[in-house]
Every structure is written in C-alpha cells, then in structure tokens.
Length: 459
Image 1 (cartoon, rainbow, N blue to C red):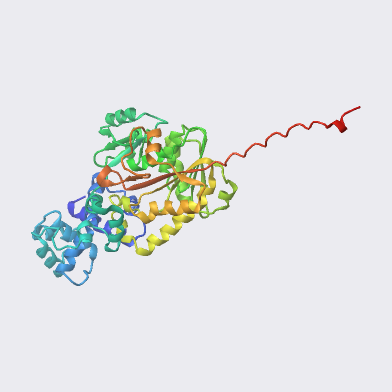
Image 2: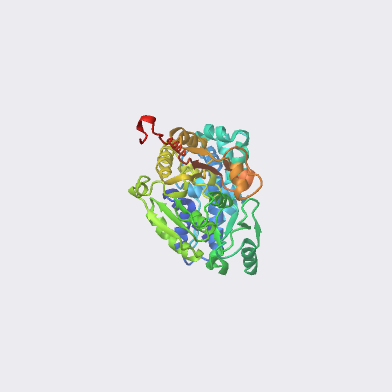
C-alpha cells in the first residue's frame, strides 16, 4: 500500500471505532478481517497512525476548536490533519500532498481543511493554557474521582496511560517453563525477557506477529498482561480443587488458573456472554487444558448458582468495570464512559459479589478484581460487601503474596493495587476474602453414671 492509502485506511478505521460500540482493538480486528488484502506491515502502520490520534484525541480536538470553532464536516479527517501537523511535524504542503485524491488515497483538502493545516503547522501539541483533562487525556467529569483514588500520583498515572502498553506473554506451564518459552521465542527471532513481578511473565518489544509463531500455535505462550497474570496466580487455585472463574469473558484468566491447577480438579468458566465463552474453546485446546467446564449464565443470579451453594474452594470475580486501568490498550474507552455508567457498574458489581459469594465453601476464598483505578469500583465495594457478609474477612495481601510468590507485594495495604506508572502493568485492584468455617459445636459433657441409693439396692 502507498503511504496515502495507509492514511486513508487509518481515517476509515478511526471512523469505525468512533461509530461502533466495540473497543478499539476489537474494531480494528474486524476492520482488518474485512480487508485481508492488507499485509502485516500495512496493518501495523495503519493501527499506529490511528492509535496516535486516539491517544491525543482531546488535545487534537482542543486545537481544532481553537482554529475552527465550527464543528468540522469530517471530524476524523480533521483529527488526522491536526495529528500530521502537531505530532508528526508535517508541513502544510506535505499534508496537502498526502490528501491528493489519488486511488485509495484521501480526497483533496477543502478550503477549511487547508486553513486548519496552515494554522497548526509549527505549533506544539501541548500548551500551558490547556486544562488538565485535555493535557492528560481524560474526561473532565472524572477528575474528582481520579484525584480521590490517585492523589499526588494522578498526573504521572494519566501520563503513563497515554502511552502504549507493553506486549506481555504468559508461559503456559502445562506446555513449557518460562525459560523454555523464552528460548522458543528466540529461535523464532523474538527477544523476550522475564517480567519483574509475575514468575510466568515474558515481555517482548513492539508487536511481533505472535499468531504465526510455532511456540504460540503449540500453546507454549499466551498473551496476557503481567497484572492479569498476578490476579490469576493470587487466586491460589490448586490441583484437585473446585474453582469458578465467574466473569470469565474470553478465558484469559481461565487458562492461567487451569495451569496452576495442573489440569487437576474442576474449573468452571462462567459468564453471561455465552458467545465469548464458546469462543474460548480454541484457546483451551491449544493450551492443552481439559479440566474446564464452560457455563453460560442468564444473569449473575442464574439458578446454577443456587444449585452449587458452598461448593467451591476458590471463586474469582474479574468484575465488569470502567476499564480505567486499561486506557493504554483502548484509549477510546475513556471517551465512551458516562457518569451514569459508573453508577450502573457499581450496582452490577455488588450484585455479582452478593451472588457469587454463595458459591464459596466454608474456608474457601472469594477473589475480587477489577482493571479500574476508581475507589468506587474497588475498596468501596469490599467495604460494602464485608458490612453485608459478616462471615467473610480480608486476607492481608502481604500474607497472600508471601505464601504464593514469596517476598513483599509491590503495593502497601490489605489489597493489591497495580498501575502503569508504578509497575508497568495495566491498572488492577485485587482483594482476597476468606469465608469463615462454622464454629465447632461444644461436645456434650458426659453424664455421670447413676449410683442406686440404699433403698434401691438389691436385698
């Protein structure tokens, strides 16, 4: 493809992302499935250019509104023009030359677009008079909640979320150790290094074509953020146990749990999105997993839950959430959020916690995780749950971490909190709760043997 054709494809991809309901990564996957003629390098360049716009969308829109107060006729073209000027440093003539109307290339600039390009050339993207949410690319209405959650770290964490996420892999211990997986990657030309926190994690540079690698097809590796790996490891699912991944989604944590269980015991992957559960079948086969039952649920209070009360050693809830810890991967997600979404998600999280807790056997563990940075979705939910369920208590994270991974956890306090700026992972919250065993009933004291009195004695 020519540079102009890639530019036009990036504009079309941006339109598809903003017009659709799916996250950017899923939209991009569908976009390229419909354009199989595009080569791997073309796809990477189109994604990189589209994501460059998504990552600085707020600042680009701020500049566009400053130059052209009226809404542009084609917002995606305007954003791309602004990005070429402010991010790539193109001259006005070079921008005009990129929009030349040739085959598969963008249509020529309109008069308003030419004016925009000329006004932006030589400017810098970041300006001192930009509001904080514009400069750091987050919705202004979320600022109080983010300040409450992050305090003095807000600027650093939002800046980290503006960048691209690392590519993290998990060594599938059903097929290979981490060292063996790193060696297999090296044989196929991919350099991998151990992640600092997860003993199974491998970090690789860039975005290598993993799906075509033999070690991937053989199930030796799975794509999984290091923080997500830690959530699965700290669930402490053991061989022979009965375990539920209650919000299993596409099955990433299910695969990790199956590996820690060594394929022994029973693992139920449950979700209300039955289609996603069904699509996990291919991943399970490739990973060599055979102790998983896939279970579609009508809702969080599906009758299946009632039929399995007090039946599982471990119940993992990777709860639906705002996804504010994953904005590096789907920068468009932040702009889809609305204030009412947070309230609805918080209510759903409470319903899921309340229902799934019934599955935990006495002495078992309930593990609650989100990929959110917001207190309302994290510690506030645990405080509510403990107030409603006196038979559960927090297991301190230092104790859980030491027992499973050794050493000290990377964050203080009773919970695990991971973030891009501090740990290089997605933002995650994790709480481990234990269900009390019934108090032992006191044994009845033996009754003294009755001794007959004199009048009852035999003559």
